[in-house]
Length: 149
Image (cartoon, rainbow, N blue to C red; front, side, top):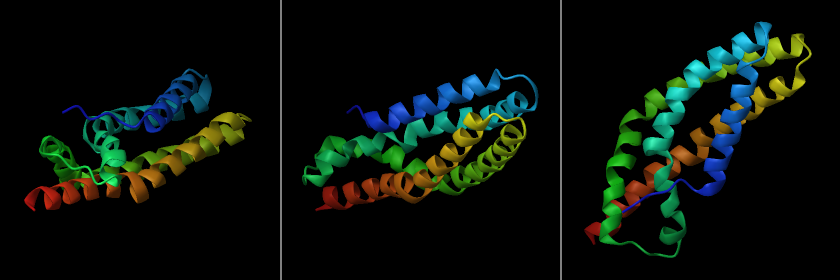
């Protein structure tokens, strides 16, 4: 069974990535700070898109009470996030630290669009920590319970 990241989340990731790429091309301290963010963020986004976010595509079906045996194939993803949750949260701390620096540098250089971007990306990380990651883990636990019965 294929698991797709919900389109709004995928679009948000693409938008954030695009803005970050643009910021990395800025000259001077803002560009350097954006490059530091990108170095931390890219491998993290890869992990998210590999196993943290695709299970969320099952939410509409699960909300309707539809659980099928083929959904068990999502369990390696949800179990992997559960096992690596502390690592993912630690990566967020590093990323947020780099984003705080980017916001400070961008403000000093009068590049408010990149300061606003950094603040938006910090909120995105908080949303993942408080909503997306726990939901992915709960999806796995729910499917396990339902398939046991």
